Length: 305
Image 1: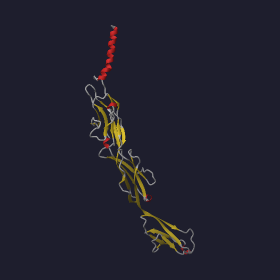
Image 2 (image 1 turned 90 degrees about the vertical axis):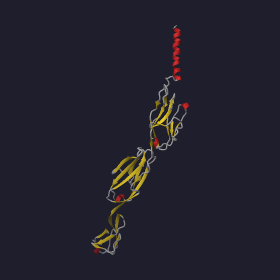
Image 3 (image 1 turned 120 degrees about the horizontal axis):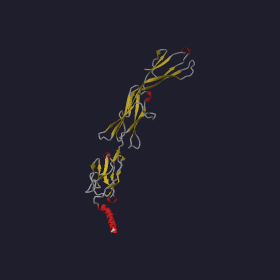
Image 4 (image 1 turned 45 degrees about the vertical axis):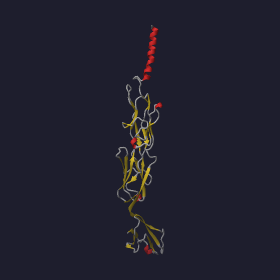
């Protein structure tokens, strides 16, 4: 009697795995591999893995909660394909030529059947980085202004995801920090942005014909995009009287030059000798011919007309 009971127990234990293989309510659909978050650049390909053990129910991918279909070709989504094969339990989603529409949440789902629960994978967030359009300076490539007046240069870069990082670079190659203001405006699609960087400063003669550069960078660009503006600054003349002789002797001809730093540079000169204006003296050069000791201490003045 004891020997018989031992046989019955052994047979019963052997039946348990057989019931599992038959699928009598004990089979579990499980994920072998699930998708993870992805960061891609516009135009790149994406592969979201999904492998399922004991798949019984219908499998589909969803994008932002919307089902893409159960066929591997995914009709209606020409850039989407379920790659792999059933024998390898592989139902990975391949997306070619990533677009902004693919910036979404994806999930691999297997439906329930009688007695077997459905399952859902982890949610994979796909983020598509988009390079911004080339930056533009609203004032154009050339700006005319006047020394002492406030100047505001504005650089914009449209369409970046993330928003472009902008910087003004001065004529020395240094990044400008003082007087700048950066802001971001979201575009209508809620994903891309317009980046704006303004620089306000007061120009002087040192800025004349200097070029300033706006640099635009974001994660989708391999190198910064640059755009440049040249500033033409109008400023008052700065006069300097130059005597060409270091020693002057009687009967020498003394040559004097009125040096000027001005914009615009086209100016006329007036010359004065001991307070009296010299006629026909509109040139930048004036010559005293055959000076004598009587000319010692003469006061010569040059002024712009």
